[in-house]
Image: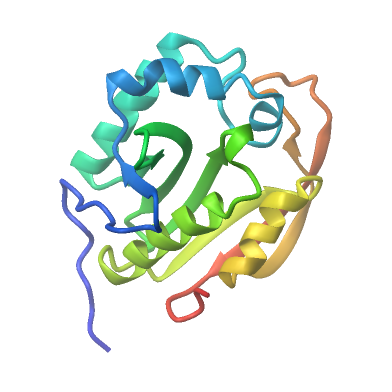
Length: 194
């Protein structure tokens, strides 16, 4: 078995996700759109974005994404409609260099849902994570109450590895009085991606 070395920064970006989509590191020009989309109650309920989501949060996300790519700690990208350059989602994989593994997460703007955006963006980033970054495992956590995210995991070939009972706050992020819900752990290894 060939041993791979951990990726060093800056990380290369994945190419060609799907027709009319592009993945890129967010810029300060994207902040107003990111702030707008992250006001969506479903994004605040099922992801870990801050609530309320402010311009300061948007700028912090841009800085976090740039640092992750530069320092090889993760690729956190926006999903852009290539025809309009409009941000319609985000996808990211945090890298655990100790275990050559990662955790993927994503959100999609309400008007872009049910069009395969999450599947296409995740498939592109996962292919890159396995083939270019050399990861040996990627986890995806999805609220059991979020059938759309669980369906994305299934379509991509993830294996359901367990359920953390009441393991997740069902938003908004940081609100410890929010209701708790079950969280499904999905896992994917090289060669399993569909």
